[in-house]
Image (cartoon, rainbow, N blue to C red; front, side, top):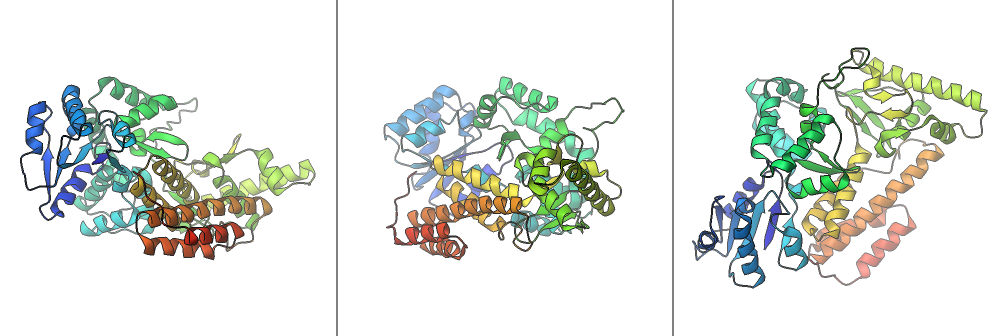
Length: 471
């Protein structure tokens, strides 16, 4: 049995129907009415005797007692057909219980999220002009949420615009409609809905325990390197109007053009496709160092220690101030209509604004951590997907084309260790599930890494007998 869970608009129904259409008549699709009785549910499953598999969409919306009887029948081995249970709430589907007992495998809903290739294909189908920067911006704005991504692309097509600044153009006429749709259709648990939107509107996330519960209920939440959070597009649309002492309304200001930062291989920093030119190598490396920190933030003392260690503090502090000023100037020259503080903040802590800046290294970490989570809970297809995406993001060693400072070399070693972990698990997982060609390719990539640990792992993977994948 398979379980496919995901929030509203994640593409579950489309994926389920596509699975049935490609089954050569061996599977049937059933959208389960909310008022279905236990007897009626069994009749739906038995409707087409020729079908080996029955897909039960929206099964989590039936009464709890009705679903409980279905689970009892599954655990007792009374059902002859294979089932695919599709719904929003892992908790209501009792997914963890069924998986832990070996009766089910989970289909990771992250597999349904848009990647660059899917967004490009959809934009092409709608005849919307775009470039690489536009795709990065779209995926940043929507977190790959299919409902939102398709809506933004469709809106650009209907208004005969390119994909550039799609969210800004779409927001004025459609933003409130998305919020209303999610509030009306996205939840069956009124209390959970209230907790979720109160947290989003106040800009304060719930506790980790509350957020995990909301995620289990199928609310529009995404997992990132800092934990669970609401989809970025919902947080931006639901943010309150606030005004500070200077009358600067921050939350209602339109977002600046996305800054895209790449640190794998050759360093690249662009704003809306235009390169940010740093006048000195140290300026670039200080900026990269900040961008690579957890949450893209660090202290001035940490920067002084990393780049001006052993130098008189007064001289070093002046050097840091000059460097930060040059970084801001480089940003201002590339985007003269935008306050550099929107990207690079230097008051107090030094930070790169994660709301306006997309860093490939953090996307890499997100995928590694999502892969680990799926790996740990037995969602092998989801784990393989996230590890493969992480492999694609890691184009080369951090700043491999530069001459990095020692502090950045330490960062490069840490990321290389993560990359070795990714390749190791790709090799092991694909070998365990019989995908030997992909496993060999990952092992060859491991051998190509310039580290003794990578070669040791590659040889160990190649010499080990195929493992048995567990659900």
